[in-house]
Length: 200
Image 1 (cartoon, helix red, strand yellow):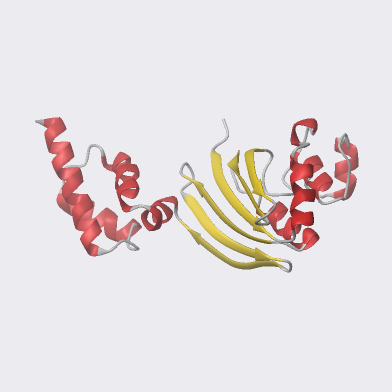
Image 2: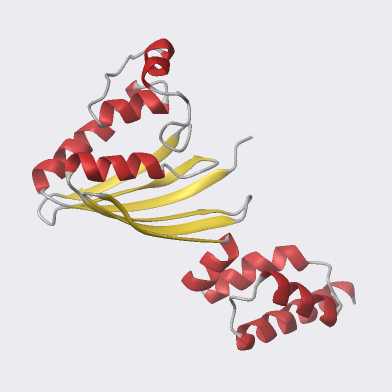
């Protein structure tokens, strides 16, 4: 079973270009392969292109655009010239597709992605020239930056049986040195208290 990678992308740009993207994304269910869909969105191919046709255009006809599928929802406001596309993809984010969309349609975008199973996440900014900035991090570091309480809840599952303070301190120093000492101490105390209550 594939690990799901959550993606959230906000596009900004000319309303007529946003509308073109919206119309293309509404056709997703008619495509069989994500590369087929990506080519269609970027005006490189059409709906119904075969694997053989995709292989002629791409070295890797399955992961050309970063993933094999993307289960997304779209929200858009043409008055504000904003489009949001969010949802799970397989294993990895569709970064290549988003970058090429920004170039092709002269759009700006910001993207957040996170995948807890393989412990990675990132934040990217795009403009009409491609990627402007890309900060990669672990899933837990992303959670920490987003919501400290959520970070503690998620991280706790890694330490459900731990009752040794020194082991916890070592693990936090080794793998979670991005966290402020105050939050590390709070988390360690939370783990020890929770686990002692379970074991008593």
